[in-house]
Structures are given as C-alpha cells and as structure tokens.
Length: 386
Image (cartoon, rainbow, N blue to C red; front, side):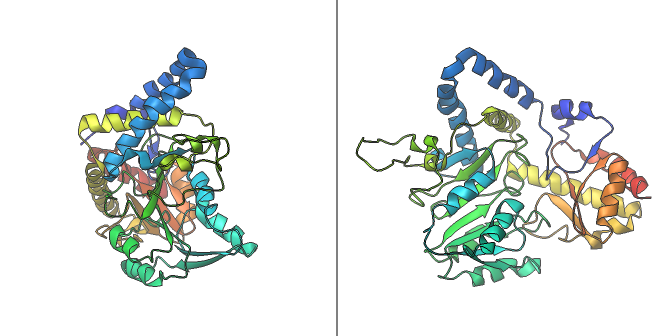
C-alpha cells in the first residue's frame, strides 16, 4: 500500500524532510486542505448561523465516524473539546471537593494528566498510586491487581506514550476495576493506531483521544466517549453542556443527557471539519484501524531489518524497548539508549525528524510512508548517525 500521493501537500512542502514522528505530529492528507477552506467558506456564508451547521451537520458526522471506528452503540456519547486536558479538568470536577482524590494510574501517563496529578499532590488534594509499566509483559496483571475499592479514579493509557507498550486486553482490565471507581482510558496512542472495540466496556469506561496524531486531523479536535449516566453534572462546565436539555426557570442548572454534558464553550470548529474529511477519505478507501496497524507493523519490521543491515548498532533490534512482536504494541518504535538525545540532534541536523524522551528515541511511521522507501530511509539514518 502506497498512499503518499494522498499527502502531496505536506510532502511537497518539505521534500527533503524525512518525517519519522507520525506518533507525534502526523502528516495531514490532502483532503484536509479542502475541509479547512470549507470551514472558512461556511463561516462567510452563514456568519452567525454557522453554529447550527456545525452542531447540526459536522459534529454528528464526526460522532458517527468515531462510534463506527470504536464499535460504540450510540454516536451521542461522544463529546468534543480543543484538547484532552479540558476533559481531564472536567472529569476531575466530578469528584467530591471535601476530601482528597484517590487515584490509580501508571508511571507512563502523558503530561496532561501526569503533571496535573503531581500538582494536586503538592496541595494534598490527591493521593496517587502509580503502577510501573515495566516489566511490560506483566503490566495488565499488576495494574488489575492494584485496583481496589479504595480508588475514586482509575486512569490509564491504552498505549504508553513514552514506550509504545500497550494494554493487551482492555475489557479484562476494566472488568477488574471495582464499580465504585470511575475508569478513564487515554486512547490517544491507540485510536486509529490499533483496532479498538469498546462495545463490551462502553457503559463502564470513559475513552478519550484526538486528531493530532493517528487521526491525521491536526489540532483542536479531541473527543471523549462518556458512559451513559456516569458523572452527570461536572462542576467544570460550559454553556454548550446544556444542549439537549429541557431547562425550567426554577430548576437547578441543567445538563444534556448524553455526551454533551462534557462540552465546554465556543471553540474553533476547523479541526472537526478536517477530522470528518479524514474519516470520509479512509472510509472511501475501505481502510480501518486494523489496516492502518498492519501497514505500520509491516513498515516497522522492514525498517528494523534495514537498520540491522546498515549496521546501526544503536538502533539494533535488541535495543527496542518493546519488542517488534510484542502484543498490544503501538504504532511507533522506541529505542532505549543513553545516546538518544545526541542521536536525536544529529538526525535532526540531517533532516530526519524523530523525538526523544530521556534515554528513549522514538521513530513513528504512518500512512504517508511506503515500504519501498524504507531502505533509503535506513541509509539516511545510518549516514546521519555516522
């Protein structure tokens, strides 16, 4: 499968760049350019009336696509926000304010959640238990064993951002959490990177992700699946959260009965236009998460073999933090080496975009890469590190 022609605008804008950060900032397919223009044109055409179109047409289209991709029963459980941190704040506002929050999480959560937890700990507002991701093979079992009735919130990533290790069985992990706790799955590195079926846990777990990475839609288009009836009145609320409710003058503050109760306020809708365009494009090609995952896994295997052939010792297969054949692994390669910062710098100077997390160098591949270019990319990496 070679879809590089569908990403011609990003590729031609910097033709000498080798972009191996699909897990971070994914290239956008060309269909998003027309979608961006359509958002502007709709604003000009409809002016004040554009929100009727956004909520009447664009939002439902995005909801239907996400529900289909995650096998959710109802698109109406999906709420949108400019970033996942808005959802983190809103979720935290659902808990009682008169005692510290008891949290179970991992030591590999993204900064949106990890930094917020550390700050709450500083003021004694949260008691946080962190389960180590390593050893990766036993993470699911150890995390499930740590869940008990003492936790208010259980928050864990489907795929860890700093390693690529993933939860092998989401259903079993969620089932192990006592009913008293709220469960949140950070799916940003799982959505459209791994086949994900939430049908068995949709009534129990929140799931959040967004467009910046594998959904190829850029910034400003994040979403949250809201389990029916769970957390009905977040204290962190915006005026959009009343959509769909029947409010009487003497009633308490009303909330929408579906995912709208987690909405905020006015936002830039262009990200949703791009997201719908991407999902339409994928559907037109007959591609789903499983196809994308299989394509990337094939590219990864070829690249790892080519790097071995080039004699790049620092990027040998045994330096992979998560083995190439590990179940549940995400769509990027993570190499553990003390030279990671230096390698990241040298590769950048050679026009090869990677990223680094301490002693971990991450290489991400996506739909805008093809198997035919892996030998050349491996050769450029070898020269850049030589």
